[in-house]
Image 1 (spheres, one colour):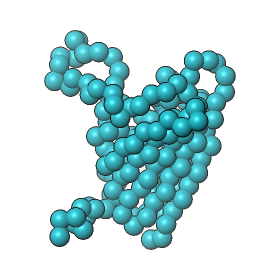
Image 2: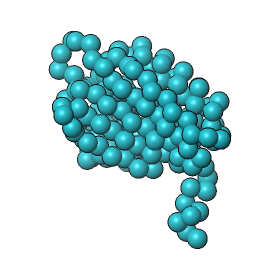
Image 3: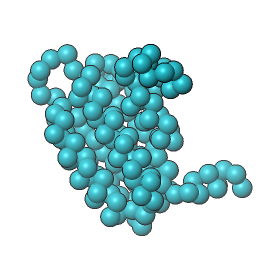
Image 4: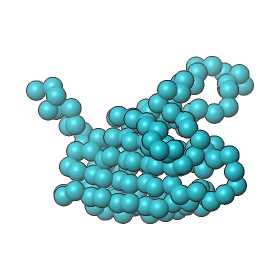
Length: 148
């Protein structure tokens, strides 16, 4: 398998989730990884995008959201960029998953899933834009080089 690069232009509308699903399907035909890892990738992308669309903008205007997926033999890099409100999801507190559901605060679980399923999470704010860069290992031997 060679390097795979996909770039997707999205708008801040939830119906653009279909574009993300199509990209993941295209990605699944181009790279070799388990069904479980594809489900995790899909969850990461859906949660990131939904969070930006639902919470990222203070107006009703249309905004661009740029998503790129770059994959090599061992890992997928996800890069999402938007011009919404500044929000560093990497510093968001983890939800209390041991607390009874009736006592839990609403929100934060999607971000928790993104951080849990991604192998590396980075956030930058540059020139009025949020830039999220995530890495997801797609092979089961991603740490073999480190351990030997």
